[in-house]
Each structure stands twice: as C-alpha cells, then as structure tokens.
Length: 452
Image (cartoon, rainbow, N blue to C red):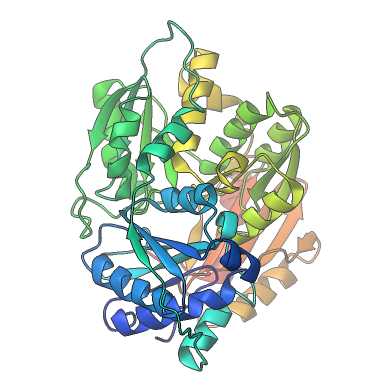
C-alpha cells in the first residue's frame, strides 16, 4: 500500500499496491472524512467507476466497506468523474467516490473522493486521515449496514450542461473533432450530438488498455491524432478528454494545441461578460497573460497552487465564477465549484459562435509571452535542488506558494515537486523566445537533463 496515498486522491497499481482488501478498508474509512451533519441529513455516498477491467471488483469492494460503516450507496455505474461530482451536489449526498486512475496506464487504478456539495477531501483530515485509519485503525464501524441502490443521473447531467450552451439562431454548425482516448469521454457522445455541432469522433470505444494512445492530453504526443484529424477534416476545433474525462485540451483549426492556461483566460472572459467583478482562480504555472486578460475583462484574478483541492477551496471561499489549471482542469461555480470538462467545451463553442472568427484568431491576443511546457526532471534530492534554484535567483521576487517561484520583470520560473510522480517540474516564461531559450539552458544546467 506504500505510496498510493497522494495529495488529493488514492492511486496505485492493481493488484500489488491496490486490491479489493484495500478498497474495502478505504470504503470503511471514508465515513471519517464526511461531515456528520450531512451524513445525518442524507447518509448516501455516490459511487461510480471508469472503464478499467479491475474497476468493477474494486468498486464492489469499496461499496461493501462503505455499507459496513453504516452509509447507504447509490451506485451509478460507469460514469465520468464530473458526473459523479454533479450527482453528489444535485442529490444532496454526503459524499462521492469515483473509482479511476485518470490518465495513468492500464495497470493503475484508484479513488477520487468528494464530500457534500462535491467539496474536495483534502488537508490533514482528508487523505492522510484515510491512510491512517486504513493502515493503523481503528476503522469506523456500525451495527447498521447501509443500503445499496443502482441509479443513473446521466439525463439530469445532460440537461444541466446543455443548458449552458448558447448557439445563436442561424449560427454556422461548427465542425469539431473529439478524441475520447478510449476513456470515459466516450459517454459524452449523446450530449455532444445534441450540441449543434458536426461531431467527428476519435476513439469512442471504452477500452481501459488505451490501445491508441495514453489518455493524457497534457502531452503533445497524445494529441497527434487529434491534430491530424482537425487538419484533414478542415475542422473548426479539436477537443481531447483524459481517461476519466475531468480534463479537456483544445486544438485550433490549424491543428495546433492551445495552452490550457490560455483556454482558462478565454473561458473566464466569456463568463465575466455576464458576471463582472467576480473572482477567477488560476494555477501558478499559468502565463502572465491569464491574470492580465482576466483584469481586462473585469474580473479579479487569484493565483493558487496546483491541485483541484486548492483551486476548489479558493473558488468556494471567494464565491468565484470559474477556475482553471494548466493540466486542463476547469472548475465552475455552476457545477458545485467542481471540474466539468464539457462545460469548458461548451463555453469555448459559445465564444466561437459569438466571435465569428477562427479559434486561432481568438487565441492570438493572448500569445504575449514565450512560455515553456512543463518540463520534468528526475532528481534524487528534490529539496536540495529547489534550494539551489532559489539561491541562484535570489535577486528575484520569490514565493513558496507551491514549490519555489522566482519572478523578474522579463521572465519567471516555478520549480515544484510533483504530487503524483517522482519528478521535479519546471515551468518558465519570458518576454521573448531568445530569453526563454537562455533561461531554459541555465535551468537545465542547474537541474540536470529533462526526463523523457
């Protein structure tokens, strides 16, 4: 079980790190992180799973554990993670668990947790408490065994997301290539077919072995088929979902990927048009153009550390309208401050219909700086390397919101340890491509050769 408890979920290889016995104990422990008042009001936990072959036995074991703790379970079966969040919020459930390892390879599985109103399970009373109870005890017990019901929220979820789509009368039918990556985005097909677009589907067959490519749209190599299809079909837009469909990545009509930080800015601008003065939360890896654009559109930009638990908590605290991360997570107040990749797609479509211009032209004003992708380094002592990074650039403005960020007038960089993988991650941005190249070479000399 060592190493499966991450900053904001549980994830490991099946069955050596994560098996049915562990799933049962996690189910029992889950009650301890739920709000007692919410449990009293509605002692239901929504459980769903992705398409991995071992998802079904793990979900069954998890459900047994939850019921043994005295909680009822609504099993909604195969579902995307955003659908699970929606079910928890809309049904007033005490919490929810999605059985998934997101974009990780086929041998992985895991659990994503939420509390009432789809609030994240985080902090010392979150994943660390579950780990302690599972490994040391005592596990919550009950003389009452919870009930199990099967159900579906798909139609309600469909109506919910489609209500935010605003295609003007007479607007051109946009041609959109969507790559589901053999993941849970496959389930979105009926919704996409009602969206007033010409849908060109790629890999819309559920297959937890991911036979075509890894379901991680953050990596450019996983977008190659989408980029090619957009060009070949003369499409207006390309969209890729990750394994559990809580993330989306966009490709413009030329076949070029659009940074999720820039997509965050564009979606924020669309939402701020009707909600001026509202907070928008963005992760600290984002381009400086994001905060600039949010201000230009009348919003209040708030910089936050990486991770859905942190973004959601800040959004809820500030009653923000929207938040986004570089990894392609998009959080909406309209969806209980939780991820909703489909709403992100629909807001981009709304923007394209309103602007009446190709997507590349809509994005162009945000290409204000030269920015790197996230670069990974395998290092033995992450803390030592971060100290060396801070010391080398001690003349800049330094903060420790997440790892170490140094800022200078013409460039900035962030180095942080990954929460899910054995890497130190670097993002940097500069005023010009030449300075970006120079600073990148400096940092590679300091941190070592990037990992493959």
